[in-house]
Amino acid sequence: MSTTICFDFGNTRLKAAIFIKKELTEIRVLENGALQEVESLLQEFHPEKTILSSVIHHDKAIESLLAKHSKFHLLGPGTLLNFTTPVGKPETIGADRLAMVAAAVDQFPKQHNLIVSMGTCITYNFVNHEAAFLGGSISPGMSMRFKAMHEQTALLPLIDPSNDFTLVGYDTKTNLLSGVILGIAAEIDGIISAYEEKYAKFNVLLTGGDICYFVPHLKKRIFADQNLIFKGLYAICEKNN
Image (tube, rainbow, N blue to C red; front, top):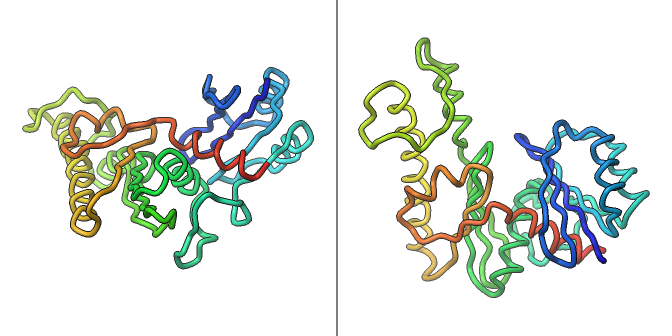
């Protein structure tokens, strides 16, 4: 039974996805990405292949451990991809963005794809029908906006995200929720509209840990897939192993 573990070390969460015979069967959240946590996963699943996508300063001993117990690949500038990166300084493209674009090309080949990732930051990533990743844009994510308003004012509280609000907020909390969540939804719809003026037809893929707060408020047609990055990591792992 062929097993692959895809590790995603993001700014907010550290996760591992277990694939068995090409199927995503389970996702584990790692508390701190310690070497012992990774070793425990290896002992439990005995993967044939592993891949690590990291945008943080992780313990380098993890790479040695994965290489010792599996066919290991570290996602980076030397990674073989299923798309090209004709952009300035392609070596600066975040590993998470590479994985998401790889998933889009794998699932929707020979099509224009706009991938919107909802995490610490919101990234817009456009890959065309020739599998060329042209770039995109980055804006502050939901939690970052809540935190900024709290830290840069004297009285606004730091609140938890929720969909329990109305367009016209009736207290401080609902005003903040309405402003941030509906504001981001309007931003996404607006960016999609801007792309529609330039490209006749394309898919919009929405992913990331915060998508549940925005899907109900978007007017544009999208494909929502919270696990898109893992599917891209799996595709990259297969290509490089």
